[in-house]
Structure formats: C-alpha cells, structure tokens
Amino acid sequence: MAMDRLPSARWRLERIPALAWATGALAALALLFAFATDGAAAVLMVLAIAAAYWTIKEARRFTIAPTNDEIELVGLGELTPLLEALPDPALLVDAQSRIVGSNAAARRQMQFEARGQFLTSVLRHPDVLEAVQAAVHEGGTRAVEYESSTQGARHTRCYVAPVTWGADRAAMLVFHDQTARISTERMRADFLANASHELRTPLASLTLLIETIAGPARDNAEERDRFLGMMQVQADRMRRLIADLLSLSRIELDEHVPPSDRADLVAVAREVVDALNPVAAERGVRIELVAPADGLGVVGERFQLAQVVQNLIDNAIKYTPKEGVVRVEIARGGDREETAQAAGRRWDEAGRAALLTPAAVANRSYAYVRVEDCGPGVDRHFLPRLGERFFRVERELGNERGGTGLGLAIVKHIVNRHRGGLLVESQQGKGSAFAAYVQLAEED
Image (cartoon, rainbow, N blue to C red):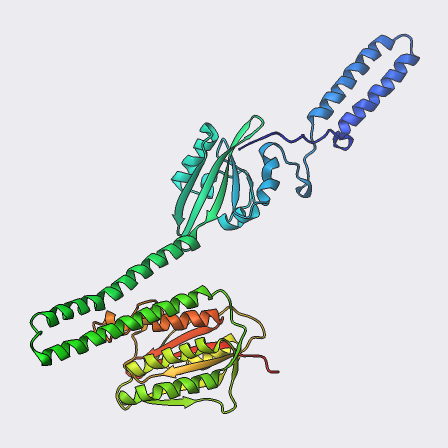
C-alpha cells in the first residue's frame, strides 16, 4: 500500500527556543550599533550576519519536546489516525519490526500500550512474522490464518500489506476474528455427521428386515408379522428424528429474533398435561401439575412454549419407573438469580448445571416451569452435556432407549430465543429436575 507523504508541520514562531530569540535580538542591536558607529562597523556587521544565520538555522533544526496531550506525529506515526478508523485491530510495523502505530481495538485485544515495542512482544506466530518481513522487504501481500488459545479457541485471519511512506517502508496488519464463522462451520459439519449416523441406523435395520421378510420369513406368517412390527418401530424412529430435525431447523432460523407475543404459561402447561396423560397412563406413570389458579402471563410464543413443556414432560415420563410421579410446577420467580435459586436448587445432595443463562437485565422478572421425575438420576459429569444435539446418557452407558437425542436441544434453543434460562439438577437414586424460565409479561 503506497501513500504520498502529508505536508510536514509548518515552522511556527512559538516553537523557536528562547536562546534563539535572545541571539536574534542581540544581532538586531548589533546591526543598529554598526550603523551608528564608525570604527568597528565592519566587524560588528560580520558578527551580526553570522549570528542571524545561526539563529535561522537553529530555529529550523530545533523542536521543543511536545507535551502528552499535543503529540506531533512524525513519519510513519502520521498514519495512526487512519488506523483508528478501522473497526478491526490493526498495527503498523516498520522495517525493524517495531510497532509504530496501532488502534484502540489492537491495544485492547493484545493488551499493550507503548509505541516502539517489537512486534514479537505482542505476537509470536511465525507465519505472521514471516509475512511482515515479506511485506517490508519484498512488497508482498498475504493473508495468514492462525489459532490462539489465550482467550479460548480464537481463530484469526491476519491481512499483511506493504506500506510505502516517503522513504520509509512498513507493513500494515489487520486482524479479523474468524471464530464465529469457523465454529458455525464445525457445528454444521458435526450436525450433518450426527444426523447421517442417526438416520443410517434405522435405515439399515429396515433394509435388513425387508431382506428377511423377502427371504427366510416369506412363508412364515408369524415371523413376518413380528418383523413388520419391528419395521414399524424403526420407521417411527426415523419419522420422529426427521420431525425433530425440521423443528430444530425452524427454531434456529428465528432464534435471533425474540418473541413479542404474550402467553399464559399455566394454560399452556395444562393443555400439554391433558394431552400426555394417556401416554403416561400407558407407562403406569402419573403427572401431577402444581400451578397458580389465576394463570401466569409470560412473553413468549405459545406453540414454542408448549414444545418446551411437552419435551420436558416426555423426557420425564421416559425415565420415571412404573407407578412413579412426574411433577410439573409452574410458578413466579424473581430476577435471574432468585429464579435460578427457586427453580433449580432444591435437593441438597444433587449435582447441578446451568445449561443456559440469560444476560443480566435490570428490572426483569421471570416465571418458570420445573419438571421432576423419580428416575435413576444422572451422574454429575454428564450434566453439562445435556442439551447437546444427539447426546443421550443411556447411549454413554450402553442402555439405549430409542430417543432422538434432540428433545433437550430443542428446549434449549427455544428458551434461548425467549432470552430465558435452562437449569438441571439431578441426584442419583432420587431423580432429575429440569427448569426453564422465561420473562414475565408486564401486567396491564
């Protein structure tokens, strides 16, 4: 990158040192005395001219050291105001690999202040240092991608370009954070790999069952019916998986847009409990609902809130033993910390994890739904992973129950869209409890 040199600072009278002023005054007096004196006029004239010449030369050469609040930029440092206009961190490095300019974003990210430091004192990646040397000495432009672990897994693309500023040569470095893009790409790749694996398993089972019916079981009606029933189970599993994948995809499309609708969380929970009572009865499980009689208004989309409650209750029914009870509680909390305390910290010996925590906002209150089962509970080290796509505790323990592994992921994404929180506490031998909380609606 080549630039023409800006005009240098103009010579100003106030920058002439006091000694030069004094010498100039004496020279002027000497000239006057020379014209008024006959004997030594010639010698005084020579001295006056020499003093005047020295005065002008000294005034042009000498620069008074500026104060901190009126620093005069010289040479490559004159480019610093241009760096401040860049939104990304940027550095200007001279031919000796010293930092001669930087913007606030770079100083904040790399945690340095003083100019004149060597680049290696704030950045040690060899490819970037090599690109800087190539830019200064060869005029080459490069883009270097690297990963640093100083602030977690941060991925950065550094653009290095040459700068010619009069006789000076330098390199400009602009750093662009790629962490979000790379994380999204990895998440998409992992999601596709997991989805393909989950679909491949029932599809392989269906293929094997069809081959069995078409071959050895063709003339055996009893075996044929048994295999058809197994095929129906696998087909249902594929249907549920595809439905959950589509649901999760739709939720993610609007996840950045918080809902503005109002819904009665108590009414939503009652409808879901009524719909799931027959399912629970088939498993010998009873659902118990504890909720305010007059309802509880929250900010949220009714259909998605129903998905949250349904998935939590479905999950609880699956792990509750026969003649057990699934307890569903709807209640008003307080602020974020008060709600987390009321909804997710009740069992003294339980392990706990906050799967999702909203940003702290003043004057915001929440309502929560807490769903408890009386199942075997979840080991503490599995709790932080609950809510990951396709993660199932029973798979880790070798006790597959046939779920899709997307139910809690759907809950987590819906609650995130509602700018709420998701908690879990579990105690082995006692059960597990999941609590989701969303913002209370303002009362009219």
